Image 1 (cartoon, rainbow, N blue to C red):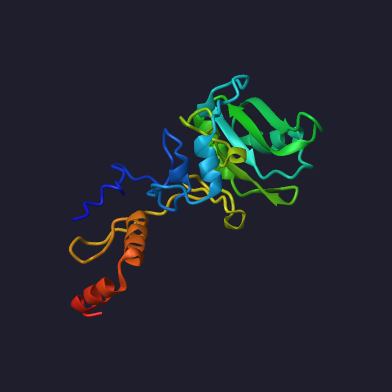
Image 2: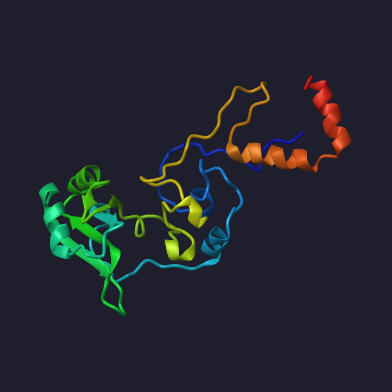
Length: 215
């Protein structure tokens, strides 16, 4: 009898990633996948990445601001984020070759409370015609972090085949839970495993089992 050990459930479910960044997990809609389902995840797993050691400041007080229009200046950002607390440091990331903005920035506040307030108030706000993304800075806080350029990161879009979950924009969906003894499954991972197993069964065996269940 199959014990289902190949699809273990986390002891403490959360819709957000905590402590450790697992590429396979963030590539799963409910965080239960056991194998990568796209090539970018394989690239993330096989890559080595170390956070930029030149970045200073307290990561617990720092927020990430993404999806910025390239026309946005540091002065504009400062004016938008100053109302939520004392800004210790701000960095609008630019391309080292062209010097042009890359569409994201980091803002460090004097306290974590200020940072969380800015996230709550500014996420989804439009600046220069674009709706921005505001979240905590994860790179220096999650063990095993892999950026989007290496197949990791958070968010993304389905059409790019690099959709990631476990973040503010795309939180995990709660695993499928059904009462035991009813033939239900405990997770998407378990459901997919059963589907694969069923496809691999000989047709005669499937017909017999379906007849026994009255299908």
